[in-house]
Amino acid sequence: MSETPFDQQKWSELLEDWQSQPVKPVDTTALLVKIKRRSWFIWLASIADVVGVALLTIMGIYGWFFAGDKKEESLLLMLLSVWGMVMIFYEFKLRRGTWRLKDQGNESVLCFSIRRCEVAISVGRLCVPAIGSCASLLLAWQALVYYCLSGELFTVFVLSGLAWLLLVLFASKWFVARKRKELAKLKALL
Amino acid sequence: MTLCELAMTQSLEQRFAQLLDQHGAMLRHLVSGYEANPALQDELFQDIALAIWSALPSFRQQCAERTFMARIAHNRLARHVDKVVKRVKTESMAAQHDDIPCRAGQLEERMVSAQRANRLLSAVRKLAKDDRQLVSLALEGFSYQEIAEVVGMSSNHIGVRLNRAKARLKSLLEGGDE
Image 1 (tube, helix red, strand yellow):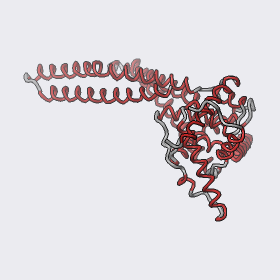
Image 2 (cartoon, each protein chain N blue to C red):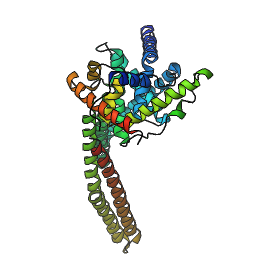
Image 3 (spheres, chains in turn blue, orange):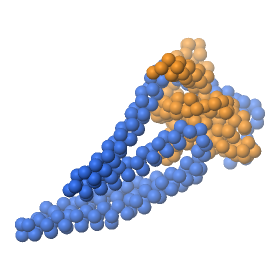
Image 4 (cartoon, rainbow over the protein chains, first blue to last red):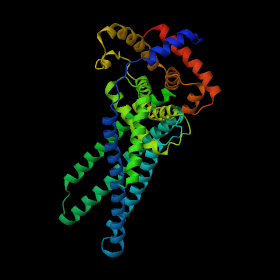
C-alpha cells in the first residue's frame, strides 16, 4: 500500500473531480411537501402510541377496581401498558437521538449495534426453552382438562403442541443464524 | 395556527430551502460516497433532509451551517451503513445522471469528467467506513477543524487519520478498480 498521500496538485484535481460530480437538482418545494407529510405521520404515530397505552392503562385500572371478576384480564392489560410505556420511552429516545446534534461516532454506533446483535442472539436462544416450555405446559393443561371432561385424549392438542414447538424451533434457529451473520459483518467493520 | 406561528413556519421553510440550495450538492456528494443505488440515495437524501428540518428550529448557529448539515448527514449515513451492514455496490454511476440536462457541446467534457469522478467515487466507496467519512468530507473542502466538529475528534487526530485515509485512497486509485 502506498504510504504517502497525494501531492497538492493531485489532491486539487481530486477535489475538482469530486466537487464537479453531477448532482440531481433539489426540488425544494416537492421535498418540503414530502418532509411535512413524513413529519406529520411520525407525529401521528407517536400520538397513536401514547393514546393506545393510555387507554390500556385506564382499562386495566378500571377492570382491576370496578370489574370484580376480571382481575386476570385487568392485570394483563396493566402489564401490557407498562410494556407499551417502555416501548414509547425507547421510541422517543431513538427519534431524539437521530435528530440531536450530538455526535454519534462510527465506533459507538457499531459497538451499540454489536451489543444489540449479541442481546438478540441470547434472546433468540432463550426463545426455544421459554416459549416452548410455556406452550407445552399450556397445551398439556388444556389436554388434561379435555381428558377430565370427556374421558379421551384429544390428539389435536398433542399434534398442535408439536407443530408449535417445531415452528418456534425453526423460527428461532433462522433468527439466530441471521443475527450471527449480521454480527460477523459488524465485527468486520470495526 | 396563529399568525406568529405561521410567520415562523414560513421563515423556517425559507431557511430550509436556502440551506438546501447552498449545500444540497454537498449532501448529494456525501450520500453518493456511501450508497451506490440511486433509489436508496434519494431515500437517504430525503431522510437527511427530514433530520435537518427537524433539527433546524433548535439550531442556534453554534457552528457553521455547512458543518451543521454535514454532521446530521454523517449521523444518518453512519446509521445507514450500520443498518445495511455490507459494503455498498461499486457499479458505475454514469447511468444515474442521465436525466441531468446538459447542452450538446458539454457532452464530451461531461463524460470525461464523469469517468474521473466515477473512478474516484468507486475508490472512496471501497474505503473502510471511518476513512470514507474523513475523505469524503475532505474532498468537499472541509478544513481539519470543520471535520473535527463533524465527527467529534480533535483536529490533530483528524490530521493523522486523514493522511492515512488519503494514502489508502491513493493506493486504491493506483491499483485501479479491483
